[in-house]
Length: 406
Ligand code: ATP
Ligand code: MG
Image 1 (cartoon, rainbow, N blue to C red):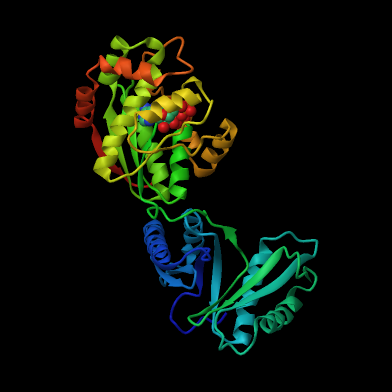
Image 2: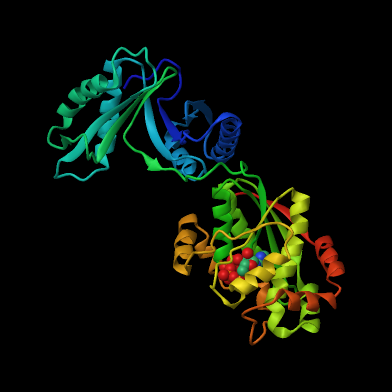
């Protein structure tokens, strides 16, 4: 196959992002963040360079790294902001050379498809270079005529319901041909919507909630509460593994580990037992708001979902939310557990979450937790405890660590 005369490898990865709604400054911020996030995600995979062309980012392996193009494509499909991803081959901007490249791409694609039946097929050209000598439909036909003869028994032209589409994109900078188009991660580039603090337990829900916030453009700072000596070091080790897994979606992640035992003991000793869980959560929200101020974050995220457990009734969520000076985002609010589990499997946190480790809320758990908590009762109970000093002390003793993607 003839390579273009740029000296670059002929294989590359194309990441597309929808552009219709992107205007003015929004567009610049979006593109800048997407480039930065893509670079941080792909740089450890293989030496490559990124180029923005139109509403797409191309990842071009450096010479010698061509064989890693599949790994680059898989990693790019995890970066929020892309609508679709393709592996592609570049071609010189000449119809005959494009047909040659198309032949190679088609042969590779057919290798992966079943034999024994005709595959509905079409060529689809997008012409971004208006100086190209043929219009799109002419190039479609020109290329189809030249590639289909090689595989007459395996292909049948079907313009309306193709199973295999050979895409050709003719741009002023370069032309490329592709047959595969996988969904991107969607969403918005992490960081474009600011920063939020996620309350991360070791459970199934909060990692998924964190991922959903990242998907909508929030950079997530994590905060986990632990109860030494009641809950051991292995709980924190599990939380760190979860953060490392989630860091894939935003590269590095910050985790604040906050000792919570003294606050829990004060609540155990001085508040109605049935309110313990709600009161724990209120103090968690307070601590998280203080961390948010340090980290310049503007919202909290939790894995709560309406009605899932006793502490998550509308009344109890209201009590918890009232203790936060920042909006509390609950991405899972309307999810059923099985929907959350499905997502947890997809993003790779499920197996970590189900490792058996109790979390701090199981400490001093009451027999009968309140179902419909009332804010006045919470505030009354808190009034007789010196929580401000305990919160200061917890923050003082907390640890901040940066965790790289695993
Ligand atoms: P998860 O699966 O995230 O643990 P859950 O459905 O089990 O959620 P709870 O354990 O009641 O519900 O916790 C509700 C939310 O409170 C969690 O999703 C998380 O955001 C927060 N949370 C609970 N425990 C902790 C903790 N030890 N550290 C940080 N946040 C916590
Ligand atoms: Mg839990």
